[in-house]
Length: 238
Image 1 (cartoon, rainbow, N blue to C red):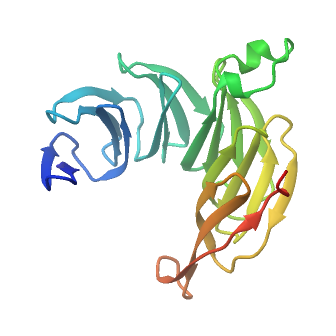
Image 2 (image 1 turned 90 degrees about the horizontal axis):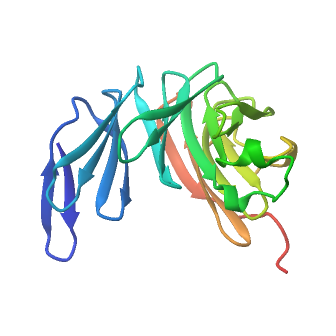
């Protein structure tokens, strides 16, 4: 089962329910959300360990989950991303279009998007960005489930992504050893960062710098080499 630790007291709470290994966990107030290779997502009460909800619908490993704007988003090896109602556990949208596994995702809420009457219907539910092993990222209209933009340019799997919501910019990291910046509204590629020698596996956006975490491989896929962190200046300080 999964274990939840109280750092101050060194006590832990074990929760049991998933039928295979857990791939990711997100804490949200007094609930924990977990996704698993058993194709499900679960919501837990972190005080009691009780399973509050099971989200079923994916047909393969669920890689990542994200709770935002009273919704739960998930990505999976089944080539889809999905949106769920948090309380009822019902699937509200399925985002289909990737040709391979969907590994990572990020969300931009409606209030973070431009106030444009022409775009209001399309952007009313916000935008979901997904990255896949098909070498692309996609931007989805959450309200309609339609693909808004496909971000093409990487020559390897998109392993990670991060959003700067204030500038509507997505940053993607890939097995092609690059980080790329994109305008999520227009789909335009804004910049390519080529400092790394190996797969970029994690990204974090800071006010002035973008910090990627690179894992270099020693000849064979899966054999870990050295890990390095490189700062990239995205824009000059105001």
